Structures are given as structure tokens and as C-alpha cells.
Image (cartoon, rainbow, N blue to C red; front, top):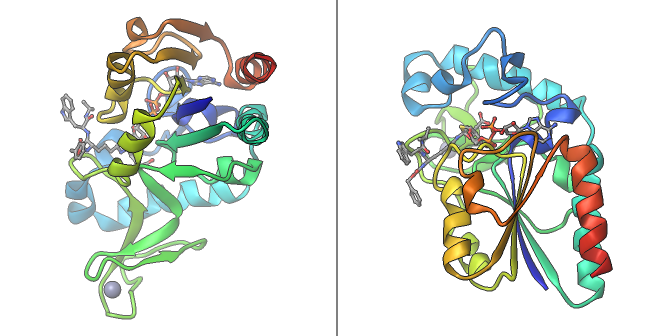
Length: 231
Ligand code: BJW
Ligand code: ZN
């Protein structure tokens, strides 16, 4: 079985990382993520955008994976033993899937623990705060290695290739509000895949899913994984 998993902020919510929409979205009291996650905001006020990502990076370094991340890693290992495969596409910029043991993770919206040079495009590891005078070797300014609104998500060819060979699509903890990720379920359905949604509440495209399971990801995901591994 080839499984395509799409995760969003809800899978990391119980690890103490904020969500953008839905219950718990007020976590970033000092910031409005929807106003800051744009290249225009970074051009206008880079120090404010750096503050936002610096706070999130510090929070991430102190956070741990929860039972949902662990279950998805267990699923990858379990399916591999049976000759199957999991492609885990995450919209999240945290590294909690990797820390839980997932090996094939595609970060379509970038990674918080990396920085990118605005001039030469080089990507470097980044565990410390960035500031407006943080520079690359080429003297270009460093920015968070994340995908903002209006920018092209990463690894799209790989993602569509994985959708082409998938047998089952599951979305965990995503509101279905941000494209192109929100459109993957429709493409999966068009290919005849069975689609499952795990979320705290129905997402914006809940009607596209055949199987819908609502509640905290840390509770629903492990029991769903158990079912898949028993099939
Ligand atoms: C729980 C839970 C628990 C809580 N257990 N669940 C009109 C129509 C269509 C598209 C557009 C349009 N106008 C503009 C666009 C394009 C735009 C877009 O989609 N805008 C929308 C607002 C309409 N998209 C883009 O610009 C993208 N680029 C693009 O389209 O380029 C063109 C292109 C396409 C295809 C190929 C090539 C080129 C780029 C989007 C970049 C998004 N960036 C951000 C910031 C990243 C950095 C950062 O983290 O700061 O990505 S925005 C933000 O939203 C972040 C997230 O990854 C993304 C999605 O959010 P997610 O993960 O779904 O989280 P939430 O918070 O929305 O939902 C959490 C869910 O969990 C909720 O439902 C809760 O209920 C639930 N939950 N606790 C289970 N314990
Ligand atoms: Zn550079």
C-alpha cells in the first residue's frame, strides 16, 4: 500500500506549537501570522518578521513530538515491513515528524530550522535568532527558509508524483484553507483514491473526504494507524 499523508498545524498543536486558524489560533497574541507570512511584510518590516520566527524557533527547540507524530512514524516503519510506503507531505515548518522517527518527510512550506540567502538562495541550518544584519557568505541578507503567500511551495513535482502512485490519501490537522495543499484531496479523489480526514473539527473541504474522524490528533491518529496496520 502506498499512502499519501498531508499534515498541517493541527498535528503539532498538542506539542505547544500554534495553529493559524480554528480553536487555539490566538496563541500568537503579539502577531498576526496572516499579515506576517508574506514577502511584502518582510520587505516592510524585516525586524518584526524575524521576531515572529525567532519566537517560534525558540518554542520549537523546546517542544517535543506528540502521539500523532509518533503514530505516523510507526505507520511508515510498519508499512515498509509489508512492502508499502508512506509519503508524508507536511505544511508544517517544524521538525517534529523527523524527531518522532519519520524518514520520508517533504516540507512543502519550508523549515524553521533553516535560513535562506535572499541573494544567492543558499540554504543553511539555523538554530539561533536571525536579525536584519544576519548575512550569508555572499553578503546577502538571510531570511527564514519558509514559503510565504504568493511564493511557490517546494517539491511540487515530487508531491504530484507521490499522489500519482498513492492508494490512500489522509489529511491530518489541516484547515483546508491554503492552496495548493488544500486542493490535493480533490486531485486524489479524481484519481479514485479513498480519502480520510483527521482533524479537531470539519475542515473547509470536509465534503471531499470519504472517511472523517474528529477529535485531537494525538488520540485519533494512533487508533487510525492501528486500523491501517491491522488491515
Ligand atoms: C487540530 C488540533 C488538534 C487544532 N488535533 N486537529 C484564492 C484561491 C486559491 C488560492 C489562492 C487564492 N488567493 C490566493 C491564493 C494562493 C494562496 C492561498 O492559498 N491563499 C489562501 C489564504 C486562499 N497560496 C499561496 O500563495 C501559496 N503559493 C501558491 O499558491 O503559489 C502558486 C503555485 C501553486 C502551485 C504550484 C506552483 C505555484 C503559498 C502558501 C504559503 C503558506 N504559508 C504559510 C506560512 C508558512 C510559514 C509559517 O509557518 O509561518 O503556511 S501560511 C500558513 O497556512 C502556513 C501553513 O502551512 C498553512 C496551512 O495551515 P494549516 O497547516 O492548515 O493550519 P491551520 O491553522 O489553518 O489549521 C489547523 C487545523 O488543525 C484546524 O482545522 C484546527 O481545527 C485543527 N486542529 N488543533 C487535530 N489538537
Ligand atoms: Zn548568499
